[in-house]
Length: 217
Image (tube, rainbow, N blue to C red; front, side, top):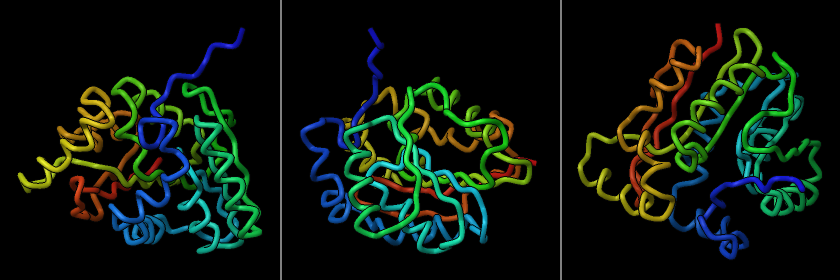
């Protein structure tokens, strides 16, 4: 029997998956964050781009629309949420590939992508899983490739740090520990990436979302 993949659904409980897009739209400056992420990614015509943890494919679709000639792929561990993504992509009539995976290994060869993006995914992952997936992203990325991640980080504002505890209580204190301590940039560097830096910060009702960029040199 195939071993079941263990993961936290987008809103922790599967019964909330159908309302994910609506929930994010009313609680986060979603479009603003994702537009900034795409702008920082420098997607060029013909670039091979992977959206890691694509969810319902909102960011994936925005990336494709921003650079129609890019070869865009989305991947997620949650098959149910990928069904919503597939429907949205068909409605937009876009050429985007979607994959599910086992939560451990990305099903791609080395040097498969020029750009990797990810939005509000890594705070769902335990520290060891974060480390493993960053290593996997490094493996599948081309030399001179760029990684851009938008996720919660440690804010200088104590109010934002307190607000993040709301998300931590929902998603789990273990999985969000590295984010709360501001360790994600260091973990990206440890995976082999260089020029790691926080490009932008967004204050939200659930804590500070930071856009982190890095290069594989």
